[in-house]
Length: 258
Length: 316
Image (cartoon, rainbow over all chains, first blue to last red; front, side, top):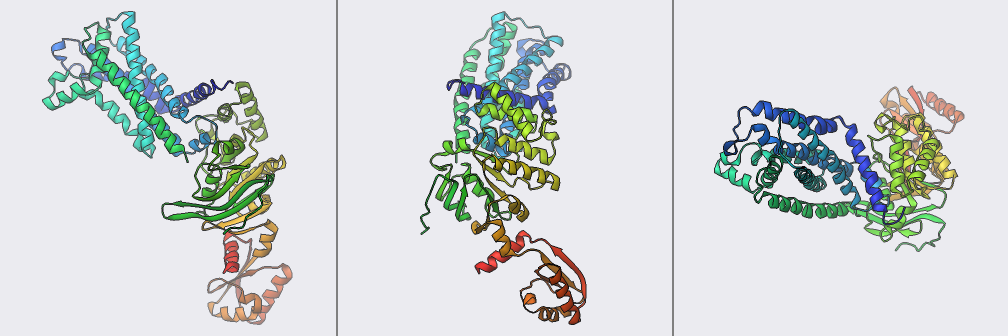
């Protein structure tokens, strides 16, 4: 194998390892396959009848699909913190360190594996939505952009999650990140219209990253005008990745150097 | 000042004046070790004696505070990458992936050692055969017994055919049969020219495998000799005599004369070095003549405690 291909080969081996691990954990499968469907059913049938979509005038299922997509992909992405914390606290990291593997490859493999699994989880959530009566109005280009935004969101959450997993010492503490990711969409324009919230929460909802991401997905899926949310989404997601990925790589190097 | 030792390439591991502290706790307090190429050194010591810390420094996982450590001719602090290319490590904590099968683990580590895909697959198969794991190759590690897990861990350390192997308490927690199996695997590795440094809490294990035993306690090497010489120093079996009445103890000690004077133990127990059946008969006769009633006699192998008792008694 040529020297240039070595990190790519290492990355591939470690991504396969991580995907194998996740596919053999029962809770991993539940998170990726069942959770998206459960959340979708819960919102459409349990909350759907009681929540109004305010001035948008949308059916609740059409309104809530973007938020459910982000919860489905984000929750699994947040669990990446647990995977890397387990590697760091168990003996595996000692084995990796005695092998000639580049420092950034191990955290990067966790991010790439998470991206593959959790974009798939978003697709499951979308399929469930279509079965439950979601009627999108999107062109093929829109669909590609939906996929790109979902992948960008999962990538951003996975990078943050790896950073968090490297900052804390135990896998229990690492798990706490998933609550943040799961609950942040409630405080956005995703589950209920932000205009119905008290002023303080409304201000928070308008300025946190989930709201532009939800708005972007909603306009792409339903063929509504985009406004500034597309640019805001791109800025937020690029910013999060640009800061958290190098930070995670440098923290990993520091924690594994002697 | 430490003596200047002549350094030759025939020493696979050379440690001089190694110190390491965690905060204000000095874990290694000036360790000297030498492992000639192709030999096995056992680092014998109780929990907390500094064995694992020493192994982690020697395998580049921890930086030394002071002293020099050379492994395979390379300095661990300055040439870590060169050292890592020559060594294998089986740490105390399992360093294999529980959720993968034995074969998947070995293929992963072979791949990460850059053997190439086909070569990696062949190497994994060879190691499974060598460590008697073919039947369990496609089962997940979570379903392995303790002995199988250690063998797989050892196989994983051998993926890149290291010339120097570090084994941190390889048999702790194993049943006697798994321990014997692992001993024979270690013997084979030694036979094929691998240099091995292993840590252990068992005198028997050191005796069985090692060319040389370094006894470590409180971060210092308190003895460094051949197993035979160490055993001569510690004595062979221990004879434990339990008296029926505590008040007989002074009389029993004086009846045993010189042997009794060196004996230790509680009120009703006298422990002394045993020297075969004649010595046992003689000892019991002496006590019988002195009117000392014996409730129970027991012969036991010298323990690590005995070793430390003897060695620290010599040092004092």
